[in-house]
Amino acid sequence: MIRKAFMMSVHPGREAEYEARHSPIWPELEKTLKEHGVHTYTIFLHPETQQLFAYVEFEDEAQWDAVADTPVCRRWWAHVHELMPSNPDDSPVAEELREVFHIES
Image (cartoon, rainbow, N blue to C red; front, side, top):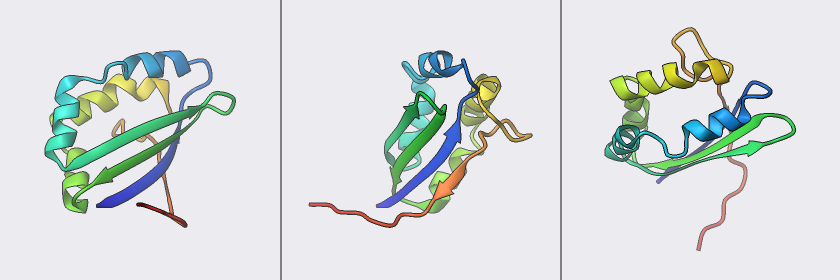
């Protein structure tokens, strides 16, 4: 299993809307993520800094990368781009984090 974590952020005052758009996430997006080998995907919000911490576990790096090319992912990015810093293609500005410790039983 591959584990990734990354940081994003939400524009100040848009936290509630960001959360609302994920409750629930579009069923077709969830299906696409699962079809691309995603087993778990969690996003946490730090309410004082508007930072988002995302953690995902998936089977294959190429499958994970391919999610970005799906029509549903592109529509999702367009759906949330005004809520958060985004790149020109509407993808969220994200900084990948390096794992320094892991324990599993």
